[in-house]
Length: 249
Image (tube, rainbow, N blue to C red; front, side):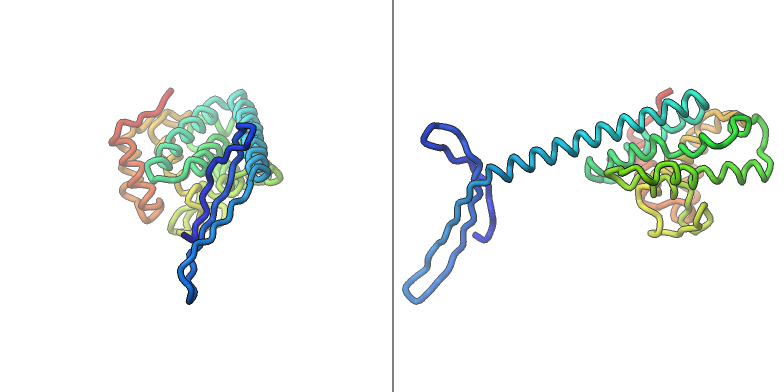
């Protein structure tokens, strides 16, 4: 009572038609009665299927754009490209561990796959520099999240990909960049990629230092849980590795 359910009716010619049934109970002096309404929802079902097909087509197109962007970065900077793929894998695993819906998890994976797209404007000699960066070089590098946002701001992603790219270097205590956001001001998607980004970067080789290892990386996020990094995200990340997650080369 009071709910709508869908069922299948059969026409005289044997073909099926989708129907919606709603029923109500009402009482008057003469007794208690039921009222049921049956409605043919064929057109609604067709329109919904068409919308779903259009959305799926958009997602595939968006995925193709992301792959193209990643390929451009890979050709220019193999370190960045491999880093983004591994961050995307870990971000998706963390989102799954936190119980996010499949659609949201896909958005997080996609944003992570191109989170460093702004580095395309950073000189390659800075990206591949073997020693410590000068302050002016580091400040230039820090602009990559804003640049990534500006590059993609007019792309109509079905997820908040552009905001996530902008925010993935923000920190819970406001010490991050580019806007110094704090806590819940930072999208949860960006908080997930932030943790995955740090863990991957510390775990793997970089032009300016050898790999520090997964234990050191997990120690970093544990020590700064609820300070720099979202506590729930850190716990989910630790759980993922305890369950056997590992980066693919």
